[in-house]
Image (cartoon, rainbow, N blue to C red):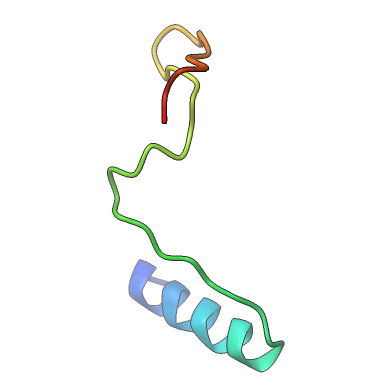
Length: 45
């Protein structure tokens, strides 16, 4: 399954079950943990 099909399936299922799907920009800082060193940046918004 490709990414587009996966996303469409998620959209369908969230509507079916009355849930909410939040789609963010690919550069949205969804993690405060550095992928290189593992350090947590608590000031990262």
